[in-house]
Length: 281
Image (tube, rainbow, N blue to C red; front, side, top):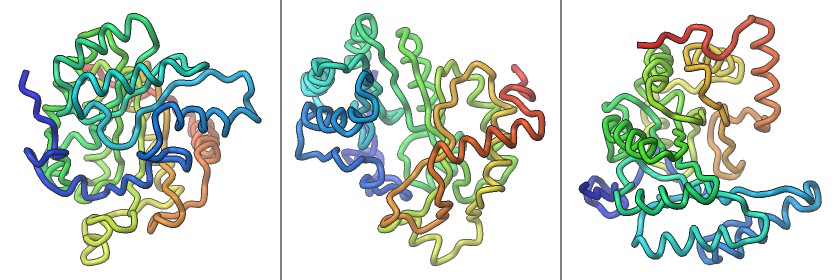
């Protein structure tokens, strides 16, 4: 299969996603100048005082973690798995950056350790993907999911709710579409405007087709979304949290667990549940 290699190397675009500032993805102990082992050991030390018996999944999150020479990627994954207490990997990447040669290795890896591959899908609408400069289509996303699941690998996707130009019904319809994909996990994120991004500049120049949800609005949106979602999909996250010094809007001042509790309380109030309105096509 052709290895497209995304807009990381200029073949499909330049400048990266319009909403993206990679500083927002990394905790303080994660820096490119540190080895995988150093980052994991510092991460373990960060949590050890509170969770001394915890086991860990090494999360390759920021940037495109399947972009590079195969042997270099294998060395990083194997290095992570060699750390005491690390019992598996979660690998985040782009739908157009998964060559068959790497899938061959990941299939073998999946037979000996816990593995999830997560794809940044973000939207099912190609016009949105073009606007935010993702450099891939939704067809690319479907293809990546099917190829990965076809190797027996647990597969997750990320979606951003509230991208510019998408109406509420467009946002909700995405739950119907992604429910038809054989995904295991799903992470939802609210749209955030981050300093230094082209999307922030776009918003402050002309925000006519943006809608930044307040907390209560977004809670209602999430509940409507998950009611249309296939009931066996594991929801791992409802929101993302960018560093205060980079976040422009919306600033809800809520931790993930606080938001999740609000969603849980509201679900009980309105007698909703995941899959309540799910329709299999």
